[in-house]
Image 1 (cartoon, one colour):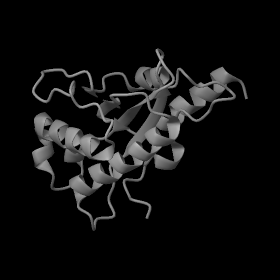
Image 2: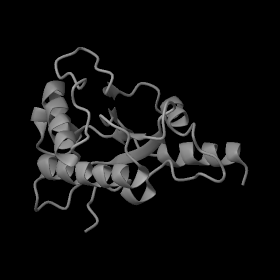
Image 3: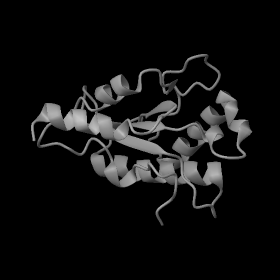
Image 4: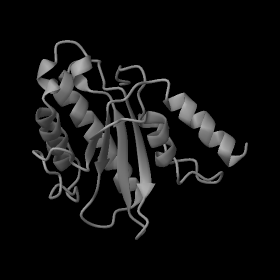
Length: 167
């Protein structure tokens, strides 16, 4: 399959869901792929536990991406994520500051190298958590590092379209 067709099919596949936020998570130092994956797993588990409770089978609808930094061999994370306010009795998530605080707390929990210094909570338009305007264009941007021999940009085993946890 050629790269262009693969990217277009991936965009179409991911675009079957409506996402509300793009969350970007960085580290304070250079970390490898394995450590990035572990931090992502811990973050998603903590976030889902804090949103829905430890005993719930619900999960946020999300698609995580791991991207190599352009300036070193380290990685950072992007996550397309639904707004928790859409899921049942969660009106407190309509306050964007509440969700930002929760994301920051969960990221701090996930890795000692989690960069939280620039995660401003009260900014009008913080760079690390954005509302999504043009979803297809954003997904295309997130897939920019895909090459036929490097298809592991999308963390397929951690994405969730169903809104249910896989125990």
